[in-house]
Length: 338
Image (cartoon, rainbow, N blue to C red; front, side):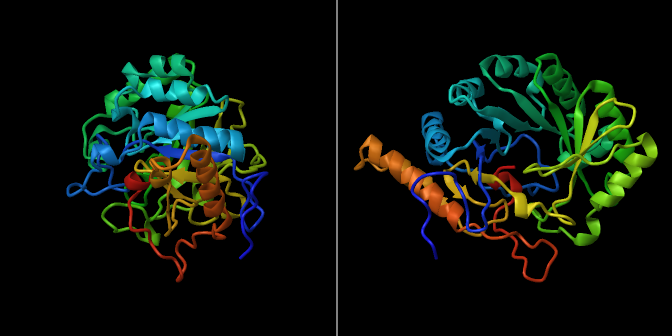
């Protein structure tokens, strides 16, 4: 195997340049979404095992200044349940990169303005249904009104764009595709429809529950009229504007048309494990590197950079979901970070 380059772009063995870092800051969540985690039995990480904000900032600084990362997304679990989130946002914003957040939106109404003031640029809010009873069944929490208030607060705070992530599951919420799109158009948010992936905490995923992106696009086109898809670049979503000019919509075909060949992202779990793919089976322990008391600052930074380069150099071609060779990760989505 060719060793990773010591300098230059963060590139893997397939020529993919990586510029996007996803950072989970907690495995805890105030929801229990069926496609993400089990109802009960989650073993939360002890607080000392979580990376501190200072440790996160250090890893992010090395990734930005030494490795060419240009975009950072804060994830969880649910990141807004961790205290003093604007403090971390400000630390990352000072690095001069695009800073985004993925959230369930339940506490966003009280935090959106502070997060925007701290330097947050954009936000993705999970919203799989507009029906209160169905929302309670999917999330196992009766908080739809709080999430809708969070959407309004994000728009009012000037976060741009505000995107709504809707995981579509056959027989669960596939009858709401048009309604969710209409809601996004009404409030000025861009809906991202996502194919159901095998990261549910209960391990019950089945390919028959996947609503293909092509079906979603056909229904949206019939209901609203869609312009041709834009060039995707590294973006996971195939994005189309509505024919009447009122906004856009994206569809992420993570199962039926995966974007692995264009992937530019790496992920850091809340306890400091670096993953080169959402479905990776191997991880690199960056927490151990950061907390090496025997190393000086310069050597620690160099070790962080080398560990990230090594992980990216070993990245596989793709995850092979729904194929015989696919191996499901041992972690659920909430433990990895979205």
